[in-house]
Image (cartoon, rainbow, N blue to C red; front, side, top):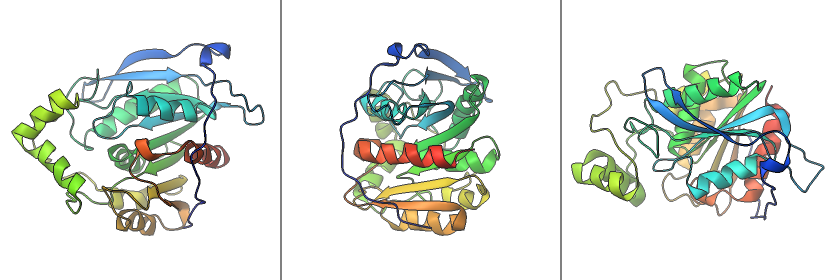
Length: 279
């Protein structure tokens, strides 16, 4: 395992993809294997002012957002715009989030949502499919790659937990209240536009740290901030140890948690890493 370089925020300059000649974004609802409709958006890529780094037309990023996010949230759109400098991008809303159907299972059945989005990316003709997940989505991309081997060409997991039921930080204690209490689920529905399932996991799904060893030989990148307020550094270190030599760990100095704290520089480095290793 290795620690990647630290970076500082940089302004990205991206033109709308309507200027590329590759087509406008496509939006649809994808059915999952268990019958949930998932709101999904395909962006074929963007023209960038930096002509030395054109987007790859065979590469597509499938972005898995964090808990309470959705495909229309500004922080998710910012991630998509940054990655579109390197290839096409599929974003979607997990079940129970945004305009998707169903109710959130907080990382369990969401593997089926991601699998539907990955399959769509393949049907759109992309030879290289890379999953990029943040927080809850980071755990989902790890579990998806383990449970559906060979379906993706690289995996990037940002700010993911290593194990379930972690309550060691105040933000995670608040999140557990949101998920497990009726009053919390009401706050989730009306305050965060997130519909949360009332049933507990049965059985408990494969944990991220149990999933990671099954991902090899698919290239794996783990990214975590050393100022993450949700999951301290023992989480990425557990994942890195479980991954062994087939993955990389970047500990980002000063970075907080997930999409909101992913700088443009970090997203550029993720795009460059992916283009070099996927496929």
